[in-house]
Amino acid sequence: MADTPKGRFVARDEAAHQAGTKQVSDYLRRYPDISDEELADLIARYRELPSVEMALLASDQALASKVELFRSQHRRETRLPFRQYAVLVAIAVIWFMIIGYSVATKL
Image (cartoon, rainbow, N blue to C red):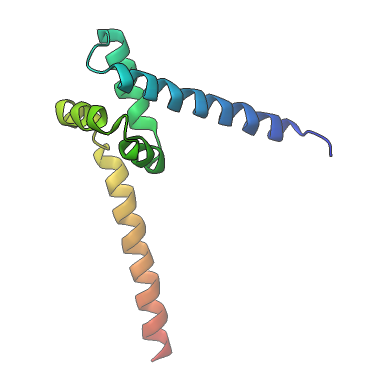
């Protein structure tokens, strides 16, 4: 099977994602004994993690207390931006409108 440019891009992107997750894990293992630059990088990378990755880090026995400490001390910086919540709410409203319209037209 030939390797397409898109396939290579996805593989590189996945490798970068895994490296980012590993870096977050490494920072959290040493937290709070990390430099200011590392803290800034941790906050930026943590905000980019998918929810599943955040949950996996929080459920790791070795990291759970560090994740909780980090999140409690940097709650404001690690919170999702309002626009992401707004997008989710908009999607839900549109979905309910579509369902409502479908039900109303069948009556």
